[in-house]
Amino acid sequence: MFAFCQDPSELETLRWLACYLTTGVHFSFYFSFIKVLGILAVTAPVALAFGFLGAMAARSRFIPFSAIGKSYIAIVRGVPDIAFFLFFVIALDQAFEWLRHSYLCPDWEEPIRQGTDFIVCPAAKLPLGSAPEVVHEAYAFGLAVITFSLVFGAFAANVLFGAMRAVPRAQLETAEAYGMSQRQTFRRVLVPQMWVYALPGLSNLWQVLIKATPLLFLLGIEDVVYWARELGGTKTARFSDYPHGDWRMWYFLALLLFYLLMTWGSEKILNRIMLRLTKGQATAGGEAQRKARPA
Amino acid sequence: MSCWDTIQSYAFRSIGFGERLLPRSDFTLCEQFTLIGSGMLWNVYFGICALLTGFCLAVAVAVAKNDSRAFVRKPAEWFVFLFRGSPLFIQFFFAYFFFLNLKGNYAFFNPFTAAWLGALIVLFLNTAAYSAEIFFGALKSIPKGDVEAADAYGLTGWTRFRRIVFPTMLRLAWPSYTNEAIFLFHATTLVFFSGFPAWQQRGDALYYASYFADKTFNPFVPYPILAFYFILLTLAIIVVFGMVNRRLNRHLPTERHPRLRLRPNLVR
Image (cartoon, rainbow over all chains, first blue to last red; front, side, top):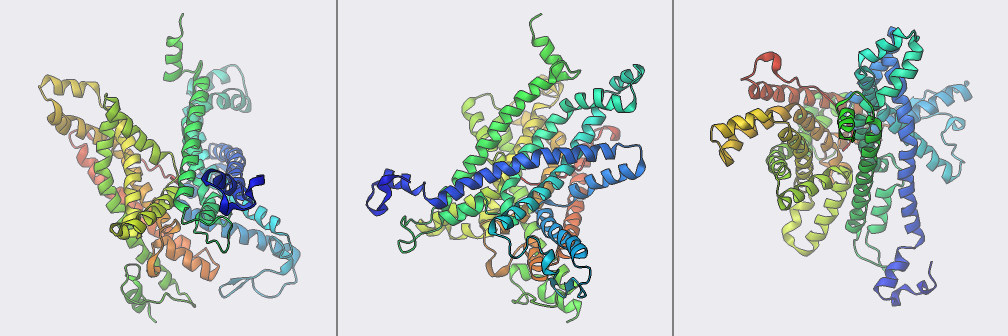
């Protein structure tokens, strides 16, 4: 990176560190933080959308819909933590391959499950065996996003379902009295008002989502945990220009600080949003704001 | 090998008794049930020990966080923020490498790099922080009248805390604390997936479940078995905590008992 990095063994501490922290692998490490932010940026809206659909289905008057919505919420929330992640990624992967298999290779004779192996025809492999490395990584990343979204979608569905029921009945009745249809009431009255009830739950969920991102490591993605372990491990002078002892502790300390910063920052921001949303609402918070304002 | 033989050789495999070699091929349902169940011993051990020790620290931290003096309150606030604001997964990794470093310098820290002690310490501190937040919330919502009545009776300091504040706090916090307990037991599955190595393949339930899933490429058997065990465990916790809840509220009319509401959570 810098001109003085030609021979690291002769540098004094500060310059050595500057060179060390700007090696190619370290940029992969920094890029993995972007991956974490990326998965947050993609998962949060998708999970919210899933949650919205789930909540709408759960409160539908049409019984099959409400059964689907409610069981989606119940099943995902009932199964304990990371087992779900480990399970879902393999299950989704096999489901995709199986679907492609039945579509692309209808003549395939052999069974898919042979003893302990799961075998589909080569054309149905996902990603294709010949695909470049990037596609493999993107596919793994995509599976992770879907898994995260499905799981957090169920939690969001639960929060939104509760929030929709928390909107005062009188508000909806007023809307009906004005002659609004079911759909209009939902769009114009229920949805705008529910957010203030949903926000505490959603912000909690967001914090949990941030803290769930290291589990990407378990899904086989080269994320922050992977790189911290790689880079922190003891390096001898034979294999690296920057030999050092076991520094994994310091790398994980950095990760710890990164996550603390993330949760601290989002708490501040979410508090702001809450203040904005409570404005003029018929809740205790809104009332307190009204009283605090000078007349 | 009959199922009974399997149980005999693998029921305590996770703590080092019985057959040394794990099954390598032709996995039967019985083997999966037995080994995953055997791994549950670790989850139960971690959960119970962390819960009991964490409870004591949590009460102390909650009281400290409720203190008006800043030099008592601030450390408690920082402790809670540190452990609630970062992922448990990273905490495990950090603690493991931290202990590994210490071990290099002082022989005293040898046992700390093993899961049974090192991971337990992390779980203990972690659950203490989460529970402290629950207890702190309960302390804040103790009815004003209760404390005023205690003052009127001339109760002060330790007596007032022991006879009025603590029981009321516990009663108010109990439904949330039940959830925290369930959550803690779920969190124990992370131990062997973080830095802590499973020595001689003595792992917890998830360790064996993923062993089977890896060997058979079939997640549809071991993970549901794992879920089954966890549902049993969760039910057991609910029963025990429900009994405590009834006892804590026995002076109140039944309809005013706070109901235990299961609010499953995901990752911490």
